[in-house]
Length: 255
Image (cartoon, rainbow, N blue to C red):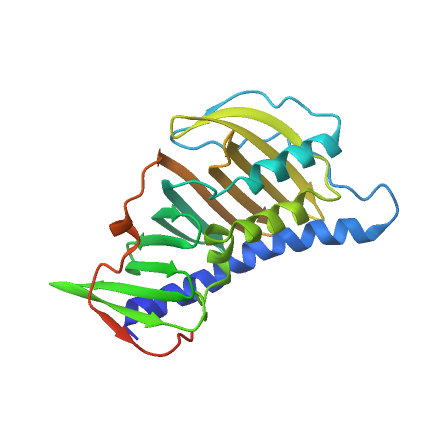
């Protein structure tokens, strides 16, 4: 497996820990059982180069806000969509920034292209029970095929390429946390944002009305992760979810 792919596996192991930690923070709050362990809503807004923020609405009914958030998450990836994102991770004073493009073609095809200055470019594709991981190289590139339902070897990617995975992550965060609700324009899309703070971990999710994930951010204990949309298109061609380079069957991917 190429050096760039190994670097990406290491990077997303770190990113996954940020996202999972936020979800676990929501679970810890649920288990307190004392009725007063919910985190307080954050007044701080997360802004991006394409965001037009408004003041939080201060939703006083956490249950209604949580239901609305879960409903929007449940709509994710139910239609063809192409979303370009910028992302950043920060831990122990080290920050990694990059970009990615998500192609979703229901019911079971998706593609995610990633790029950072240090790790180069890599593409992950799923087509039913078959997965591909592709690395660009000078003069071309290579794709490795992993058949038999092995799936992508990165837990971070599961919520991007699996609607149930995103709904589960959102549900864990929303349960047991007070939520602030606000309206923003992100990547030219009207979005509704939900932010909260549970067990020392903050989080924010922003969705368009048809379930496009426009922003996700998590933070706590000096570790931060941000993913924000920069453009959204509603057309995905069949060729967009095909391997872009010659394919080698390696019978299963391992980190």
